[in-house]
Length: 171
Image (cartoon, rainbow, N blue to C red):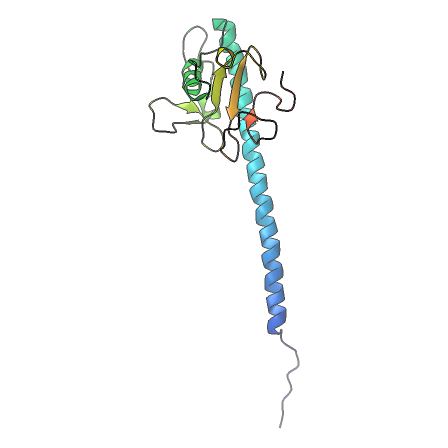
């Protein structure tokens, strides 16, 4: 006597198609999550730069100038000076009241801390005397993060650098 099965199972091809579809969908979701994470870090870094600008304005009103960057156009020495000046207790300092809002790091194992971006790289600072008082940010200062790719592109309009000026319309 023969018995019949009441249902039909999935074929190997059908199962492979389902696995491929799930793989494609998961890769799309992962790409979207990665992109969102990068945008969130960029927004966090922009917020840090905005906070540093406000602190620099308070510092400048007390000292009638911005912190020096000691002739360093790369902004790394300036980053060390920036941290030191904004955390000083001289005059009405410290100018950064909640240091927990401003991440710090010490890339290169140097002794002096620096304010850092969301990728744990220093936010570079250059006083206007050290870049010849030229655009961008004529007669103020430059704050610059190398952005997601980590390459210093000096705030070029096509770069992913995060800066304190409008890259499309330098002053």
